[in-house]
Length: 252
Image (cartoon, rainbow, N blue to C red):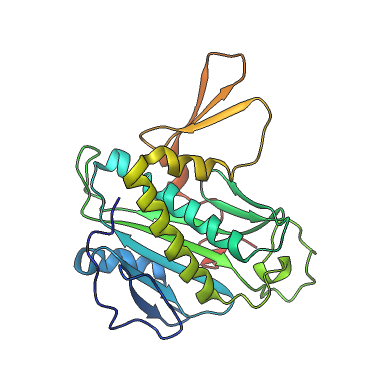
């Protein structure tokens, strides 16, 4: 899933430092990184990273150009999620719990902070290679509810969990670097490396083995049993569990 061509960074916002394949486009606070990236993906192409200039939310979307049919290419979502989890881990305090609730939600110390989304051209068949994919992430960095930290233990923000002095731009920068690592590993060693990195972030369960199928479905095998439980990927990513469409942000 290569970022096939490096493009100039003439529109790079000065506060971001990104690896060479990326071109950053900054939107104002009312912008929608996901929708904007989808709209410009056919024109701008691989490596375009759209982000919104907010201090309370790390909101971004990156355009990728797959090299395999849509059926398999959608697994790029898992690479993006693994990269974002690793980006958070770099800035976390020791013993901080960073968990993915399959397939798309991030929890830090048990509280929801955000998640990921993916899009592709609607008219692409499963057997066709899509001209582009967009992975988008949104992480709550600062709580804007005005309530006391910990009042709702199921919802949190990075600032409340010890991510001190972490700006939204730092999350985006770190994600970009970790995404490049994930893509390089995928190209060199196969998707299994990406799947392992992602699966390690799922809640731990004794006697359970989990794998990701070629089409993105989650496969669950229980020790001593032959049957395989399959969780369908497409229906779940169609309506992100973490996203509040009215608030246009992580659920509160």
